[in-house]
Length: 81
Image (cartoon, rainbow, N blue to C red; front, side, top):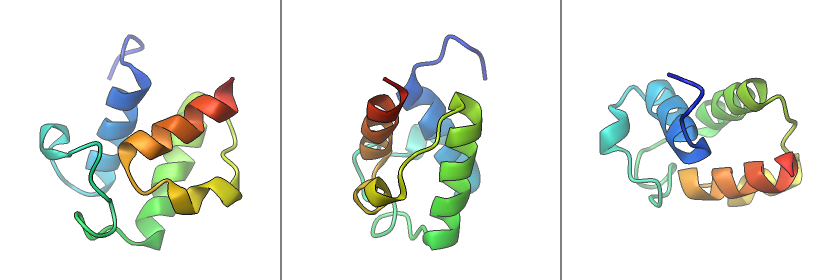
């Protein structure tokens, strides 16, 4: 990974790695739980990696709505601003 990646590309790569899949196969608008069978532990790991990479703390209140890569990036953008 490099520093020129967009947030959506970086978050997609993190999610794909945690779910053991190719980033190109990950639809950023698909529900991570229903479509990819992610579970709450996967979400905890995804959030921790995103927070560490971007040095931000995502609010727990926003996590239930962050069910897609796009929604997670939207939350990240709001918190990083």
